[in-house]
Image 1 (cartoon, rainbow, N blue to C red):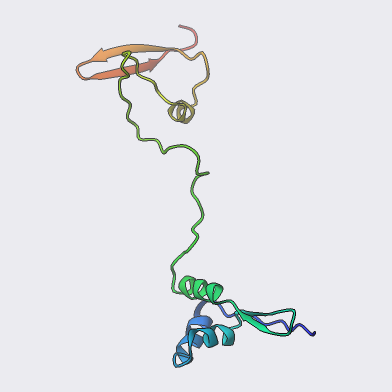
Image 2 (cartoon, one colour; image 1 turned 120 degrees about the vertical axis):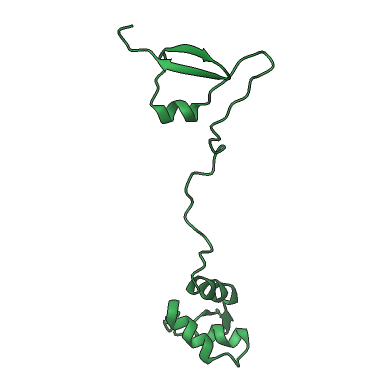
Length: 124
């Protein structure tokens, strides 16, 4: 069995070829554009799924955009709520964003409907 290397069309070339072959069935279009493989028994397997994905991406629609974060945890909302025991917990996302270290101290200033946390200098 001799394997021939077929280049798969992508981008504008793929879209142009699909337009030229609009009268053919989807399976034939995929085969003509190079989206097939040879099987062990000298048959041809058409990769319609890969062909359709390539057509969609050639139209400028990203099927698998690059993830912007690692997918773990929640996204920061910049809101907190008072727990039943009266405590307010600030999550590690916020402390990491501010570059805080364990042991950093703050002065608490209470205002009308707000609380200010003012970081203390190390010499205080």
